[in-house]
Structure formats: structure tokens, C-alpha cells
Amino acid sequence: MTFLLPVTLSLFFSIILPFSDMLPEAAAFSIEQPETGSVHPSNKTVSVVIDVGATTGITKVQFYWYEEQEDMLKAFVEEKLAGMAATPPFGANLRPPQAATGRYRLLAVAEQENRQTDDEEWAVFDEVLLHIQPHGSLEEIDFETDKPLKFGRASAVRVYDQLDFLGKTIDLPVVGRFSDGALRSIRSAAAGTTYHVDDESVITINENGRLRLVGNGATTVTVKNGGVEKKLNVLVEVNSEPNQPPVGDPGPTQTVYSGETVVLNGLTSYDPEGGSLQYSWAQIRGSKIALLDPDSAKASFLAPFVAEPRLFRFTLRVTDVQGADSVPAVVDIMVEP
Image (cartoon, rainbow, N blue to C red; front, side, top):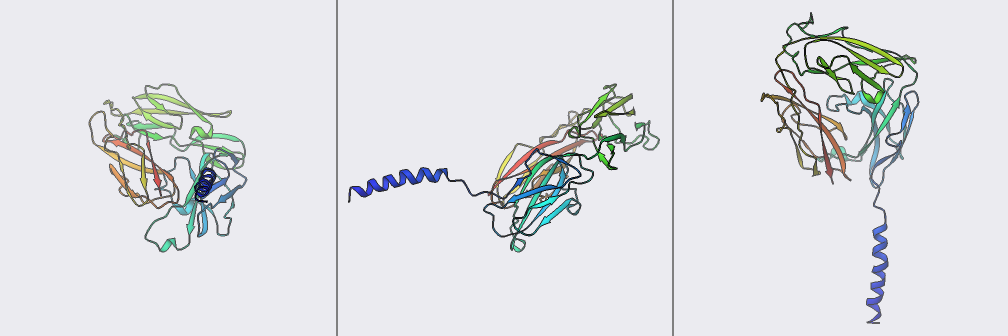
């Protein structure tokens, strides 16, 4: 027996250990349905199935709708609340916002028993990115702005406005009127909208409707979505002093642990002309956190306690002294348990 025992144990571990390696890890709290990337009509409810996994003590799950790039730090949570489930298995039937079109984030946030009395902030959540297809056909495109759109001395209201300098950017407010009676923002490329500028020495515009002043003069923006088209005349008469837009740098991707202080560092952002900068941080992924000093070069937050790795995403936008803006730059923060 003294010889057989080691052999028996050897066989035991040779069988059990490889088998244990194949055992699945305990599932995390997650949205099982709908799947990321799935398409949903705006007039029909979305069936949500939650898998609580190994997470214990969940008392309710709250659901929120956010546009893909919406700043969660400025959005009112009450207005974004889509519904709540307080009975296991915490599924729900949610109706997309009436004005939704394009890519939206569905965020599910769990509340756990007694967590509200703890000093530690826990984040138990999951989110999926969905494509919301508007009910009804697009009948008309409009711009929620003056027509024609004037900048600088061309504007009777904002004469010599200090913000109207070359390099300034604005998000062109493009809306669509649909046959179901809804008025929806269709500015982004995800909504199927395309742009064309007759003279790009006056303005440029990106695929998501962000317009930039690059020179004085007059031009026309043509906006198309499906078979509908609309034109907007633009007149620019601003200080012609050359001004290159600044460049935002939010730093590299970080992996941190629960409870650590996380610093978002934008000090390597710069203005090609060497001027000073204003900073603006926004959160666009993860459950909403308390971000300290979001209008400074260095913003920070306390990494919440998580049961499994969770992604938080932030953007940094910088503005020079003449009002020129950078393209929002993205940084990901992965929080580990």
C-alpha cells in the first residue's frame, strides 16, 4: 500500500486538476439579452434578460438609456432612468426613448443588500450598445439654428464675439421630422446622415456633424439622410488671424484596482501656438462615478469596488484662448477587483 498510495494520488491529481482547469468561472452580472449591436425599432419594447451570475444580495436593477457619446456627468440620472426590476430574475421590457435613433447604450445597474450603508462604493453593472431604428419614415430635415448660420461680424447678435475665431467648432443641430410625429436628432453618422461642404476653405464638417471654422467667406452645407436632403448657408466673418486647433491628450489606458485613486492626466495636451488651455472631461462608459475637477488638467475619481473587471471610458476636450476646440480624445480605465 505504501507504493500504491502515491500512484493513486498521482492518478487522482492527473485527472482532477486538468478537469478543474476546464470548469467555467463563476458568471458575472451581465445583460444576456439584447445582444450588443442588435437593431431595435423605436416603437417596440426591448426585452432585457439579466444573469446575476455569482453576485449575491441584489435587491433591484435599474436601467438607463444613454446616447453613445453622451456625457453622463452632465446628464440628469432621473431623466435617463428607463425602468426598474425589483424581483428576480430582474428582467424587464423597456421602451427606447421616443426621440432615439442611431447607437444607444443600455446600462443596467444593480443595487445590493446593505451596500447603501457601507463606506465602500460598489459598482455592479453591465451595458450593451444597441442600434435604435426610428419608427416611421423621415419626412423632413431641419436645423435648430438661425438660417443662414452666421459667425462673427456677419451675425447681428454676436458682433465681434470673442468665441468666433478660426478653429472654433460647434455641433451642428440637425433634426429630422418623422411620419410618426417624432422630432429626432439625426446629426451623427450612426443615424444615417451624410454631409457635404461646397467650400472647405471656409468650414469643414466631420461625419458626426461637428463644424469647424477654417476661413472667412460663404459656403453651403448639404445634409442627406435616405432620400431626404436639406441645405444650410453658412457665412463666416471672423478675426482672420490664423489659429490652429489644440490637441487633447488624455493619457494612456490604465488598469487600476478597486479603491485606488485614479488620476486622468491631460497635461500633455497642447496648443500649436503655445497658448494656455481650458479642459473638459466627460464620462461615456460605465456606471456613473463622481469625477473630481472635471474642468481641470487633472481630474480624479475613486475606483469603485467591482466583483469583476469593468471598463470606464472618458473623453477630454481642450479649448485654446481664442475658442478653438480639440477633437474629443478617449481614454479607457479598466477597474479590477
